[in-house]
Length: 565
Image (cartoon, rainbow, N blue to C red; front, side, top):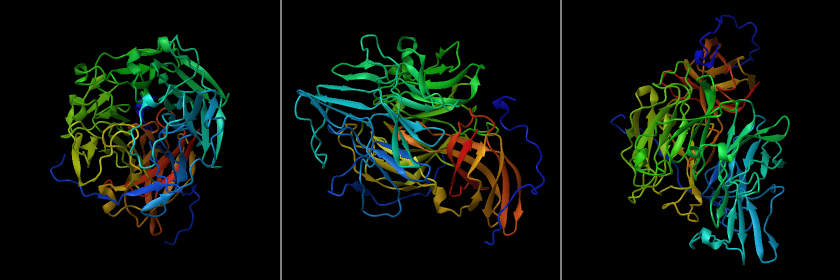
C-alpha cells in the first residue's frame, strides 16, 4: 500500500476490552476575533536586552533562542519557560556553554569568534536539537560591539571576514547539555577548500531519521562563495555522507536566507522524495536514494520572471497532510507567502503542487509582506503574520488562510502595534497560542526588537475540547487511544511537529491528520482510538504535539508525544 492510499485500509474497531484505560472521575468579510498580550522584553541580570533571531520549541514546552552575531563572543542563547507575563524576563544566557566553539580567540592581530547565529536547526528523532553551521567573525582590530540599546549601526563592513563553519553541536533538552557531532564534510566552490563550512544552511529531518544539510555560503566576506552541496548525518553510524557535490547541485535551490527544503509524504513519480525552493521561485525535486538525483521543474512561481530573486523574503510551509487530500491540493503541496520588495510576490500567496507540477491561482493578501511568518494552526488553517514592506506600512493584522474553504483569506481583528519584519521568530505553542518575537522595521541587522508578545488565534476565545489523557508514545502504524472530557464529540486528531524557525522559515514544521477509528463514551468522558501515520515519509519519527478538535474545528490544548519506529 502506497502513501497515496493514506489510511484508506483501516480495520473496523468495535472492542475496547484490550485497552487498559485509567479510572477517571472527573476570506470572509468580517475580521476574526483574536487577541494580543502586552509587549514584554528579555534581559540579562545586568540589564542587557536580548534580541532573538532563532527559536525552537523543546519537547518539554520550553523555548530555545539564539541571538544575532553582534559581537566577537558567542551570541547569547537561552532556554526559557513562559510561566507568567512579567514586563521583562530575566534569563541567564549561554548556560550550559557551547562545546568546541571559539569564544573570541586572538591570533596575532586577528580576533576570531564563532557563533551559532545564522545556523540551521531541526530536531532529531531522539529529541535533540541539531544545529549546523553558523557565523565565524574575523576582525583585524578591536572586535566591534553593538551597544545594548541597539542605537549604533552594525554592518558587515565592520569585519575583515565573515564565514561559515563546519561544526554541528546538538542540544539535549532531557539533560540540558550540549554535545558535538562530527564536523560536516560537504565542500563548496572549487576555490574554497575548507570542507563542510556553511553559513545559512538548511537542516531537514528525513524519513530515514537522518539529518540533511543543504546549501549555504562558505564565505560571506570579503567575497561570497557558495556551498550548495547536500550531505546527511546518520545518527546510527555517527557519520556524514555527501548526496550531491556543489557542482552537481542545481543553482535553483540557492536562497541567501536558507533554501526551503521539505520531506515529501509520498514520492513524485516514485523517485523524488524531497522538494526544494530557492530565491528564484523555481521548484526542484531531489531523490535521496538516486540514481537520478535531481529534477528542476520549469514552472516558476507566478510573477517570478519579473525579478532575479523574487522569492527572497518569502515564507514557505508544507501544507497540512490531510487524510483524503480534501483541501484542493495533493499531500506534499507547499504554500508560499510574500516575497522580494517591489515585486508582485510581496503581496501574493501561492500554492505549488509537486504531484501535478501546477501552481494554484495566486491569492492577493492586500498588503505587502517581506519576511513574514507562516504558522500551521492545529485546525489546518495557515496563519500569516508579521513581515515588513517597502511602503512604510506595518502589516500588523494576521491573516488566516483556509484550504478547506477554497483557500479563503480572512483577517484578524487586532493589529500588532510594532512592525516585526526581518529576523522575526514565531512558534505555535502546545496550548494553541502563537509566540511572535524579535524582528525589525527595515530589514537591517542590528535593529532587532528585544521584545515579544503572545497572539491568541480566534479559536482561543471559544469553548475548547479537553484532551485529558493519551499515550506518551506510539509507533508508526500503531493504534492509540485518547480520553477527552464532557463527552464532547471529536471530529479530528492531528500531529503538529515542534517548530524550529529562523528567517521566516520553520525547518521542522509539519501537520498530519490522523484517522479516528472508534469513538465512544467512557463514564463521564469520551474515548477515541486513532491510528498513527503508517510511514516515516508522512511523519518522520520524533516529538509532536497531539491535538484533538471538536465538530467546529476548535482544537484542544496539545499533549506532546513521541512517534517511534
